[in-house]
Image (cartoon, rainbow, N blue to C red; front, side, top):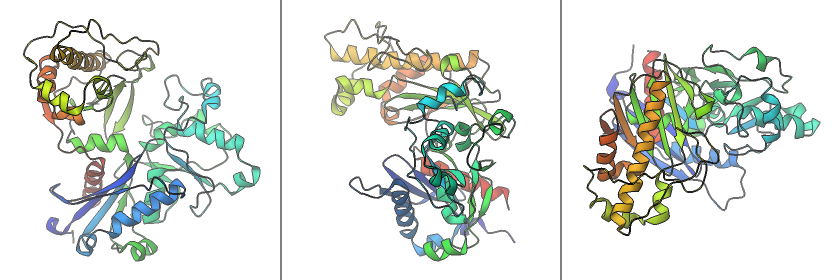
Length: 429
């Protein structure tokens, strides 16, 4: 007999760069509990110990009645944060974090093997980190190594107890082919020192809470643990976007756009690649423009005050391309691309008007580029990040963008993971 909806709760955990968060929702996606656990900055613990400590705190701090109603859990982690583990899941080296570029020397040889534009062709990809371990670890350590595990995989393993399982969002930068849903032959031909994880769709059932985890965390054995995702895709899921043409713009320190498309788009000329999302494709890119440029010139208080004075129904007449320093990724991919921030008017309102409109033009160019390359035309653009609160900026963007703008349902990646757990649980009922 299926569980009544009013008795069902779903948890999402987000392991970010500075701490972890948990969101518990019910079947109508109403938030029941939210909590966070910052990592101890002065701690001498290895990263994996800090993650475990946060996992313990977030789950054990849930009210007992809430834990008893949990039906599914999903976890997201930072993309390309990986560990080497032995056959019982114990790390044999400290984790390598998402931005660790230790594998830079192994990127160039991969260009002769991997397809052009592949996400593995990055100095921080999961695969180049594995190649770096293969070449630099002592043979005694490599002999203990059994598998490569992503951050989200390893934390889910603490709950269900099964090793060597991953999702195709985390496995993308390991070389997994999300089009064919298989490891490609060129990857299989590499003489890798460990077993690669079995890859499943995000949200699919990995297993149920193990006896050990049930005793440790007070979780019911009937609680499902579903395949997770990366932090950026969890944040996309939190927005409420689900249908082709729905998009999310994140107006944070940088500008990131993601569009749900019926057509896959990968184009290394513009730094564009696609994540699979069910039968759709999450297509997007990240520009170096964004809020960090604004903070070079204005405090938060000044931004709020001056924004309210901007005539957002009129163009600024300033042709800016706001960047902190030379170099752009999307919609132009040019490491030497120069900022345009002149002429600078004496009136700070006019200057801010030009900056905000310049960022909005880059956003519009990004969506135009995705559509010109074959992506589904945007129908609605959800907005997340600090810039979403700026009404003048929203009005400027609405004048330039092809689709209506709406606020994101949530901006917390843990909420997106909780929605993933809910979706997964519904599929196994």
